[in-house]
Length: 106
Length: 106
Image 1 (cartoon, rainbow over the protein chains, first blue to last red):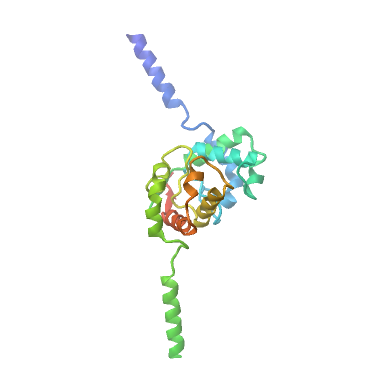
Image 2 (image 1 turned 60 degrees about the horizontal axis):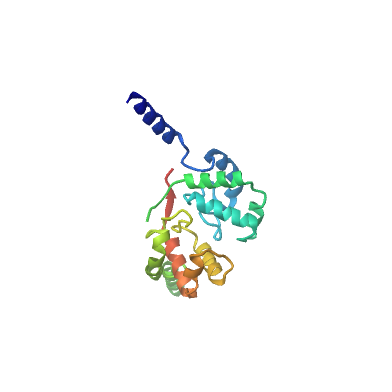
């Protein structure tokens, strides 16, 4: 019974320690410096044809970056920006933007 | 001089009355009922591969909807959803989502 309790405690600790995101938020934040000119330092768009990225679902951001990288989705700036990204870069960027929580204020 | 004053007053009133968005926010809100299953009633995503639309720049949303409608951008659900939209529908939807102000809370 004590062993079972220990097992449960360890299992719960492991869950608590597991990252909330597939990518690395801190590395993503660092990489996102190149995105800030159009998407803002906090993921809020600074230009009319760039979307806000703050709070976007991690899967959505990684899927779109991969689509830009492969050419499936095209944009004159993003097709160039996404080209050199590794899978890890993409996962980390997606984690960073997903980690920024947003709310509707109006 | 009095005429000039009157002209300025009328010009200012016209500016104040001009809409902040190209589309009609109220009509867009009505149309957006069909978007809510994936993008939420307030434009906040309910599924991992759908983006938040609340607070997105009006031009960005209308450009993307037109890209889905023309087939330039593809997604199994969005390509179908965008197909029957008129230009007015698209402008109104873009106005509605752009009218929802967001802020980063973390």
